[in-house]
Structure formats: C-alpha cells, structure tokens
Image (cartoon, rainbow, N blue to C red):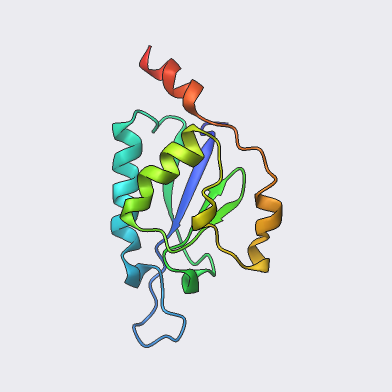
Amino acid sequence: MRYKKHIFICTNLRPPEHPKGSCGQKGSESLRDKFKNKIAELGLNHIARVDSAGCLDACGYGISIVIYPEGIWYGDVKEEDIDKIINGHLLEGRVIEELLIKNERFKPEIMLNLEIEPLKNDRKQLSE
C-alpha cells in the first residue's frame, strides 16, 4: 500500500437552490487545500493522502470527510479541526468523537470500537 491513510474531503458542489446544500458551498475546497498543506508541512504526505471526493452523501452534516482504512466519518469539519484530526486521529490513533457524524447510517458505535493505527512512528522515521 502506498499510503497508510486516505482522507477524503467532500468537494461536491450542488446548485445553491438544492435542498440538501453541498460541502462545496461550505468551503470544502479551501479546507482540502489547508489540510493538504498541513500534511505536507508535517512531512506526512508520503504516508497520508488528502483527496477530493465527489458526493459522499453526507452534505447535510457540514463539510464531511472520511478517513480510510478505518472508515471514520467526521462532519461539520472546519479549519480549526485540521490540527485536531491530524494530531488526534492520524498521529495518536484516536477517534475525535465530537466530530463524528452521529447517524446510524455511518455506524458510530462500530467506529468507536476500531483500533486506529497511529502514524507517529512513521513520522519519526521520516525525520531521521
């Protein structure tokens, strides 16, 4: 596997009058760019990949992202959450519970029982 983590950020853009709205209307492209820049700045861009996603069918939950391989879904993600996700989820291997999409379709009770492989050891190897 080339990357250990994939962070997909919904950048779907619907017409402004669409009843579901869209993550693109909420600034997800800017969030994606800032996420990518932070990952690169920390030297994680060889083991974690930030990508745009089309519709993740979660636009009603604010800007939505999903992180694989765990399949953890975060909603209403804002710029100030980037460090929290990188430090907590990616580097320390813990779910950021307050950002989880709390809807049965996203199976939060299953997500909370997963072990997340932290990247902190990989980060150390990159800097050596």
